[in-house]
Image 1: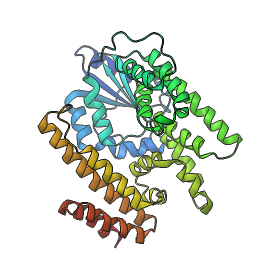
Image 2 (image 1 turned 120 degrees about the horizontal axis):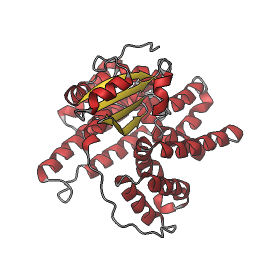
Image 3 (image 1 turned 90 degrees about the vertical axis):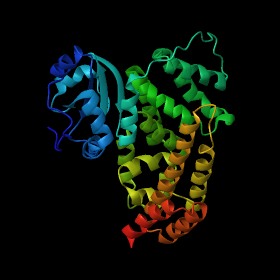
Length: 362
């Protein structure tokens, strides 16, 4: 039985009754697969699923229920829940999409808003794909967008296994490719199973041999792709209090930052930065590039608004960086980052964001 209260927007209803209720009008049914023993499920119930954007969308567009996979195993079994929490979207009684793992409200809201999108026609794709990583990437993306998940899985597995060997694609595997794989495994259970097997083989290698940074990074990224960050957080907890563990933790790279931040684990997050000023400079450089007008991709008014969003995000990221450093006891570095952030962006908005951090820790 669940040990935490369900968000009010989620009704108590048997799955079969909920499907029947939404089948005739063709409305959306959102099923939140949860477990009373999962910390991530507890946190998602208390935070994400109570945020106004998520609640308002569900109230306007869907019936939402909670399914506890521990206390209601028989009804959960046909859904093949492989990890919790998982959100499952049904339309007219038919499953359409899944979103696995702990997610923030913006991610869930974006997913909900995208449920009505049409699939893209991939058209005629080359039969002989060869071993060109760039060409294979384009084909894999087209297959994913067109909903040809079985073929997309084969190409994404090939890319995951081979992209690390292509020096021109350094970093792409753990960023863009990982993002595509996440979309794929949320849409198609066999893809999830394939990449879970790959993750488990990496875990076995880590257990049997030395702690190689590249293997640990791959394991962390695959956990994120599979919506299983709780597994990563459990590993982080085993290293607490071990002064020699910091290099091992840092082998997880930037991919540890997001799950730690979502869970409010600021001190753990602050320990990860090797060079905080360099991190701030990277965030600023990205913000400048991302804020450039995109007339060919977006209308002028939307392009300008996108620039405002990116600038606002940089202020938030700078404040979060300061907060994590202070929480980790790196006060001197936090002050250096704060001063540098104001030099890069002397706006009142930046000063206010940083002031809130100082107020919390003074």
